[in-house]
Length: 529
Length: 70
Image 1 (cartoon, rainbow over the protein chains, first blue to last red):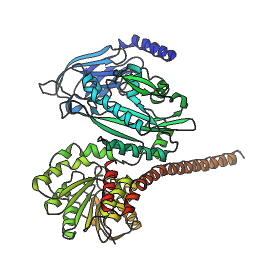
Image 2: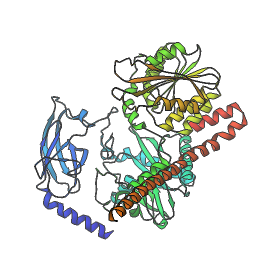
Image 3: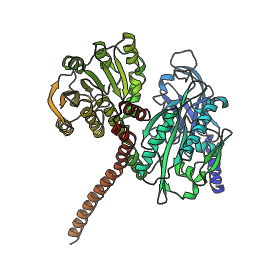
Image 4: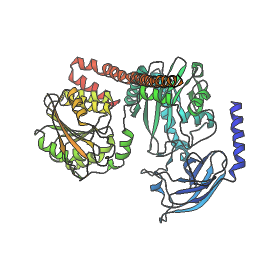
């Protein structure tokens, strides 16, 4: 430990000599120009005294051609919408605390101060994942109490379930290095090492834990077979995520979702010791520095708010194969849909929705699978149909639900994740028991997911449509500009997959694309006996 | 002679590369079975017994509880 600290100090001394010559020379609405000397290091960007973003002087910048020391960096895309108005802009070396740039900066024409606040009015900044969140930096001790309480609750609850959890990743790092949450961090992480040694058992255990947490009244959100988030409401009304990462040991190696795969001695873990976080005591691995080194490398003692994991490919592959693959493309669709999901959409139907409205037997319930914002679902409900809008981004259809409520029409939204076997089969088991005729509308869903998701949709269809129900699916097969999130699908493969799942394909006719593009679209109509 | 050895070595290297790729793909396939096995185990444990009871209320409650925890 002394050796590591010594090295960090030596490195810090080396940069002190250089920092005076490194400076930010230009700032405008698109980015900034710098003169950079010496080793790569982290710079915090402060707007009116508050850190909003951090970047590495070399890693995250681009060298100006034919210049040795001049570099440029653009403002991150996510910051741009906020860059309106005046601010005191400071660039500060994160480790040394020395300023390398100070500007009274005007962005655009607005006269107000530049403000980084979210829709709830909370101050936000960019966290290490490049997302805007209410980071810990601006939080009072009182505001952190509910999160600390939740950590206590969850750790105690997991102990009842025979799992010894401890602060992990940035939360463990903050506790061990500073006794506090890291100012630039935005969430709290917990980890545990399962008693099981086989991934399948670790996953089943994680499912069991999620149910137990959910039964105690916390909202949860699963990332993978070994990690999920527990949502905790704080005193100011903001909801903060508490991530729970599962791990296991096998033959002297530790794997911890989502970045660790390392040689590890069990005595470094057990018996658990303690660490202090914001004045409270929490469990910690017997030798936390060993785990921190596995997570952040040997330089974990040197603060780095712009840290990026460099997980070895072999570890990523293992963790991917064992645990991931049940939330395929979900993050992309969340980004696309959640912002727009709060507005009530105009019920303007797609060609497929019109077709289904004309074809589906009177009184048949319509399942809009992959409903997105729920525009078709709302329109069909307005036509007098009983409709369920299914999606794995459940918040996307909240505007449509409000619209349906105002109109007094029959629209329900339910979660369905086609790449999660449990979601598909449990929902299938639920609906197959309900009486009545059903049809499924799936507009550009089969080519928005992977093979697992396509199989999921066919499995769901084989349950929900048992006894004569029909699937109507529009699929992009190529041509024109790729629509957002879609990958062209060979129609023959789809026909084969449908038949494998017991569907009789009635037609796969080409459909003219309404917007005049050259996209080739086929409409698959299939029925289940 | 040298040309023949060089060609043989290249062929062997290509063959070994193909075999390594094949082995990697097989390992990945096997690893992916863990998630599917866990999903099925969980479904059977949580839903099979209530479904077998044929008690409609119990079945509905079991599915509802299961889905709450997804």
